[in-house]
Amino acid sequence: LILQIAVLLQGGILSAAAFSLIGIFQTNEDTAVRVILWLNGVIIGFLMFYRLCHRALFLMNAGLEILFILPVVCLFQIVPFAVLSSTALGPDGWRYWYVADTVVFVFGIVANWLALRALKPSQYSDDLRALYERLHVMIRQQVIEGIAATLLTLLLTIWILMMPQEWPYATAFVSVHLALTILSGLIIVREDSRETAALREKFAS
Image (tube, rainbow, N blue to C red; front, top):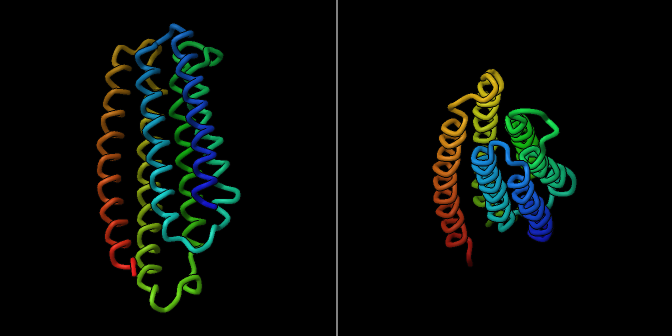
């Protein structure tokens, strides 16, 4: 169930991203900045999807975060793409991508917190108690990481909104942010892959 919901929602996000990219090239305003932020949004979306799929392999119960919060998170993931393809927000309207992205991270924290609350020892048999404990630590760590990512994005939001219009370093600013996203994404994929492989090997029998 979790994987089915995740795949359906991710398909909707990617469709929105594709239409957004077309809109970006039609706006002819700050195209380079918008494309970089578009790439950033796509990477963030894939990382969220990747973590959810890995977690779904070991969850015994789909909690409230799957049935309600996850669709809401995915809905808000579409908003940053809409911001990038719109000129309705005025000059340098792409800056509001950071506001929308901060909201996405906030709802991600809520989803992880609900997942943590929904995880109960009673859902696992005695021989799988170590799996429950490891999952509990993993999700709690993701909550902490989500808070850190939200605070960083909020700081970047305040910074970029304080800058004057046609700020000459905007492209460099979003490029550095993209580099940080890629670096953190590589670390997340590597660590989560190792963790999942270790869990599957340990509980394969």
